[in-house]
Image (tube, rainbow, N blue to C red):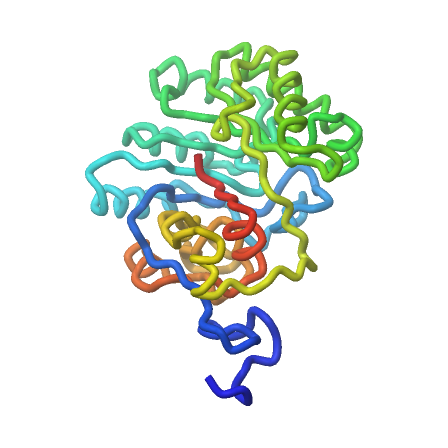
Length: 316
């Protein structure tokens, strides 16, 4: 690529970096996790929410059972074995069809990882009764509810989510523990503590709430790297795989996709991963077949900061 052809800014050209180096891409290796984003509406508005979910943000609308079923059928055609299905939002328990969606997934014997803040939407009588019905019907054996906490410190958590949010989330966690549901925690590691201290803090909290959770297990306690909207990470080139001692197959878009439905859209579409719902370059088609046909170009700052450099993955 000639110097005069270099893109003017970072993360703008699908094939080349601002320095003219070949941009890294990730080819599809086979389905590990299919995500459904039930919408960007949420009962709270977190200060650093990466997709700006809030009680008013409906740019991604609620998925319906009718939206979900064709993708479950396509998964059945892709693989004879069950896969991991993830549900995220917004707050999934605000979605009117969340219980029948969960039932459809679990009935097909997929494992289900549902991300929630464990606050008021989950604690409504209809939702609690529905969760207990899934459990009593033997459908909850492959269900994990991953509860997001911004800190094991109440003050830090409430600074992000609002006064009283920590206490409300803990009440939800206690209920899940009392009812025997499998629970994981998704936390953040604050800037003033190392990973060992963070795991110790979350472990002590889990124990105090009656949760059977091994804080040393990265699947039971996920510590996510921070994603800063104005962050300026380096672009990832093909040479970075060797420099960083990583392989493309370890990156989330090698084996994960997410289904969304935009406001006023006629149907749902598939994005490259759970993070990039606002960049049209990462919206890959209406079907999984379309969305897995070509490699994903790592042409976004979060590809670098969260996935490659941060080592993050949203799946279990």
